[in-house]
Image (cartoon, rainbow, N blue to C red; front, top):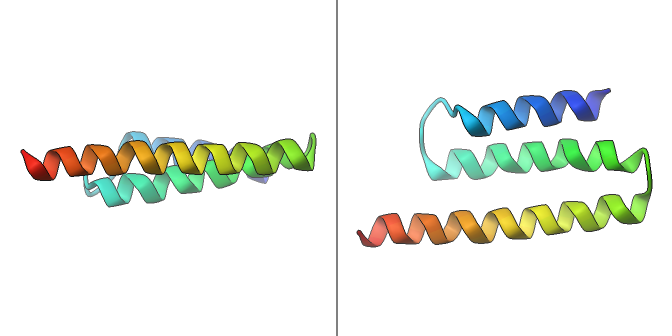
Length: 73
């Protein structure tokens, strides 16, 4: 229940950030991925850890590239 709440709040915060900065979006996506980790812990610990690592790595990589392109332009 707590994991779904954190996932929902983090998803809404990432979709509609208050200050529209990329750092704020990265932080909000990390909050949502922590909620996803809590949800996945109900099913299996290995799947939860692999999912958390994958989501964190992919979102950080993509958003850092977006930030670099925006800064260069």
